[in-house]
Amino acid sequence: MSSQSVAQAWTTSSTATAPAVDGGRLLRRIEELGRIGRDPVTGGITREGFSAADREARAYVMAEARAAGLCVAVDAAGNIIIRGSAAAAGERPVVLMGSHLDTVVNGGRLDGAYGVIAALEVVQAWAESGGGGGLEPVAVAFTNEEGALFPQPFFGSMVLAGRLAGLPREPLDHQGGPLRGPLALAGGDLDALGSAAWSSDAVAAYLEVHVEQGPVLERAGSRIGVVDGITGRDVLTVEIRGTAGHAGTTPMAGRADALAAASRVVLAAERIAAERGLCRVATVGRLHISPNSPNTVAEAVRLTADLRDTDAARMRNAEAALRDALADIARQTGTDIEVVGRVYSDPVATSADLRALIEETALELGVPYAVLPSGAGHDALVVADLAPVAMIFVPSIGGVSHVPEEDTAPDDLVLGAEVLLRTALRASGLPTGPRR
Ligand code: HGY
Ligand code: MN
Ligand code: MN
Image 1: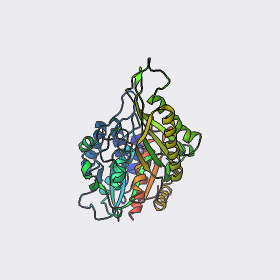
Image 2 (image 1 turned 135 degrees about the vertical axis):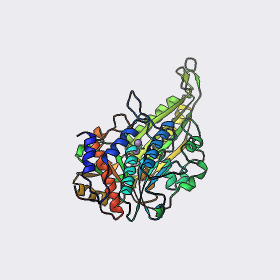
Image 3 (image 1 turned 135 degrees about the horizontal axis):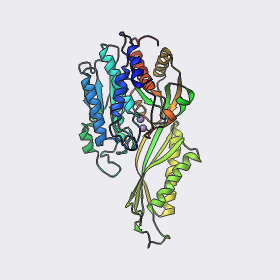
Image 4 (image 1 turned 45 degrees about the vertical axis):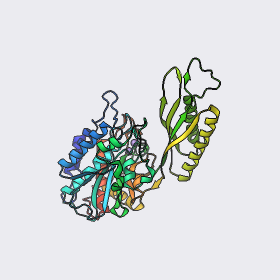
């Protein structure tokens, strides 16, 4: 079935009584958003947080929401907040739904973006059916979830959850550029972040629908994933300082080669997970060399080491082992190695009550589902500080993500949004419409 006919089927089969997802509108927005920041050669999407492409994607979503008659606001962290109406704001606790619009470099069109478009669809469908319910549906697009340019992943959700202590006073990008200006261009204000923090009694529940980014659902033949836990994440920014020199005249003995030292750090991180099993995965995905000259011994390297596990004690143990390795490598190579940044999020369990609502919804829709952990980090990890959270996964074709090939079947995208809507309606005490 084409995405249009699939979407059409969903729209016509809905009932007038309860709100229903407009599949055609959902798929159109995903398609249009997926053109922003797209590389014409690789097909990959690059919309680093607070970049011009990110701002273009934000403008698209805000324009779609305003054209739908919804109320759009931007907070001091640049988070986009979308409600049915401004008048209703604050009258009831909120069922918050959302994700992020920023991407990794040369990533996929669904990671984050799908969750924002689905949340927009739920708020719009709810408003079109007359609103109501014990909770107010609110959609959010969090800023800088990936940390692709400014290495503070989950920036927007950390501010909304009031976790300001974890943020540097003057956040800088990987090359030392200040966040202040780009944040202001996104409508934020670095000096007013406190004003964007929500109180825990304002949010009754946070729901995020997301592509699984792994192979589990596809292999199991499940169409919906009910996430029971979200991996913790420990991202260290490491600076390695050596001594630059002429590649041809500097003797090997006595060199303080920052890149040679960095290579040992990369392998030490890999060993911590792959050989020693101290945490589930460890990745050095970014490495910046200066002067990055083919015939100069590297003077300095800045890299990020990303450690993950669903057990907080294991993650702390893995970090301690990496720090020990950094000290050993500094001694062995005559370089100076310092951890200059750390963004840490404990693993979290999702809410059993919200998981039960998702499972009820999958049963009501008669679709196969599976319960599984998330190996990827998500804004829900941070919002869990504020409210009960739950995540709904849809299958990733081939289990790949953070690559141009990232994809999900159109009817699974529509189904995930329908499950998000019905779960939010259940949480709000509203009827969800007929079994399908
Ligand atoms: O890296 C992650 O797990 C997520 O995609 N930000
Ligand atoms: Mn991602
Ligand atoms: Mn994501």
